[in-house]
Structure formats: C-alpha cells, structure tokens
Image (cartoon, rainbow, N blue to C red; front, side, top):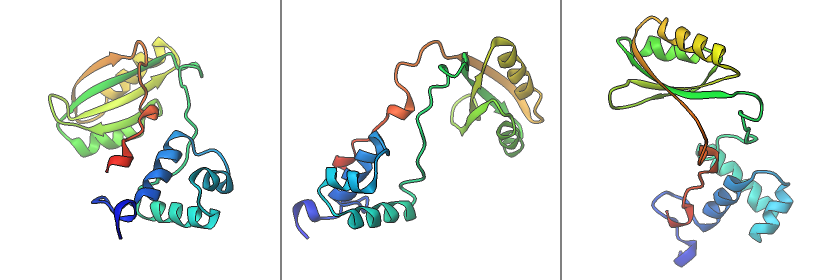
Length: 160
C-alpha cells in the first residue's frame, strides 16, 4: 500500500476517515446519497460503516437536541467529591435530570451535567445529589450561554 491507501497508526485509512468526518457532520441521508458524496459504491460504504461500528468507533446515531429550546432553562455542572466513588456514580446515574457523569481528576471525583426546566427543579436535583450516600461535597456551576457545544466537535480525523 502506498500514500493515501496506507493505513494510519489508528488503523483507519483515508476512506474510513472521510466516512467518520462526513457522519460527524450529519448522519442523515441514505447510504446511496452518502456513498455518492464519497465517490464509492453503496455496498463499500455499508461494509466500511459496519466495520467502524464493530470496532466501536461509531457507537450509534442521534439527533442533536437543543435542550434549552425544549424548555430546560437550567443546565449546569455539579462537581462531586465522594468517599465511595462506585456508590456515588450509581446514584448519579439514577437521577433523571443527570445527563452525563464523568470521573475526573482534580478537587472533584466526578462531574455531573444536569438539565432542569426551572430553578426549583434545579435546586431539588442539587439536593438529591447532596443526599446520595457517599457524597461529601458539591460545587455547582450554571451554564449561562453555550458558546460551543460538544455536538459541534469534529476531530481533525484526516490527520490521524
């Protein structure tokens, strides 16, 4: 293999990277339409996508939802310190308003992203987090404006 046909360190060739880049922008459209954009046969595209799914590189397809436009006016991050990480992680996962939970380094052990419709629900969610067995301390930051959303992140996949 030479040039563009060579597989990079990540195990992805140029076509795989182009597929990922295109699907990162939008996964809408038929295989036929996407294959046409990539100048490949639809069967080739389907097999490549299935291989990327099997490798765990593509983990599903979702609509990009603007939660603030849905009425979730209070979105924030709660830094959580704990004395029982496993129990706190499970507890956080069980709170409906918790969108995501991350284990982190630094002063906090976990960061929970929460989304609530109003201030009362937000306060009740913070209270529920503080009430979890194993939580020793929390610190909350409310999002005032979204400057760049993680849904907008498209890696520079062509330079892998």
